[in-house]
Length: 147
Image (tube, rainbow, N blue to C red; front, side, top):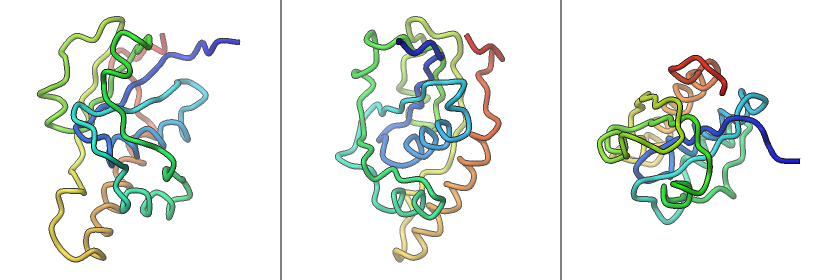
């Protein structure tokens, strides 16, 4: 039976931390309302290990996730709602995505850009994880419609 839930695509530049977290939290908190995927405008080779670790601490395993390119979705999946979680993707993402009803911009700091000892970097990943999690609990497309 085909899935009839509207598709949300979470976009970031590298699709290695913030968008992966947002995808996972969205599935946890709103998986009954939306089918959620994530992608990057310039995807990295792997999900950041500290993102995997921080999410595992929150009870969510993203260790099997992989960064994906926007080209895997553009014109191939009926994306209804874009959720952009970083400045670079907001600037480089197409302004119009065929078939979408909404384009939301909810930026989060890039924990992968943190410079310092690993334990401090992990603290930054935890901080961003908590912000993303809190946001995804209540996020709705800007149209307010679940189409």
